[in-house]
Image (cartoon, rainbow, N blue to C red; front, side, top):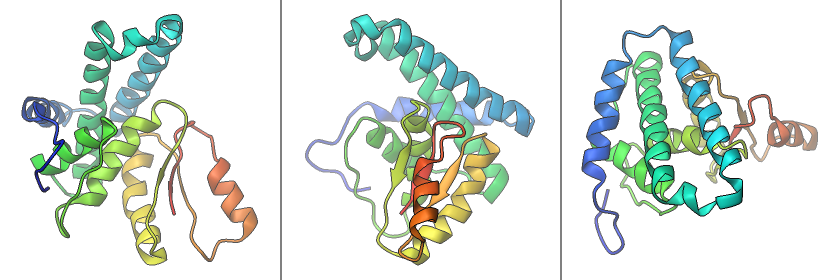
Length: 189
C-alpha cells in the first residue's frame, strides 16, 4: 500500500485488534463463525433502525464504538474464514487497506499485495448493511476466478455471492444482480 495525501491515521491499533480477534475465533466451528457474522448483521441493522431518527448518532459517539466493534468482529471472522478456506493468513497491510476502504476512501495497492482479500473483507462488512456490494473488474477471467475463489469465504460466513461477466445472458445478469437471499450479494463484474 502506498502512503500519501489523505491516508487515514490510527489504523494500526484497529488492525492489531482485528488480527487478535481472528486468532480468538479459531476455536469456533464453521457454523459458529457464520453465526458471529449473522449476529453482527442483526446488531448493525438494529442499531441503525433505532437510530434512524438521529442518524448522526451512528457516525459519532456511541455509534462509532458500536460500529467499530461490529466491524472488528466481522473482519476477524473473514480473516479466520480465509485461513480455513484458502489457507491464507491476512497481513496487516491487507486489513489496513480494508479499514481504509470501509471509511469510504480509495486505496492503491501494487500487484501482489492482496487487493482481492482486502476487497472481500470490505465487501462482507459493507454487505451487512443489506444494500449489496459490487466489486468491479474489467477482466472476465479475474471476475470468474475471484468469484469462485473468494465466494468460498463468503459462503462459509453465510453470505451470498453472484458473478456477472460479458458472456452472461440478460437473464443470468439480472438473476445475479437481484439476488437477495441474505441481502448482501457480492457481485464480481
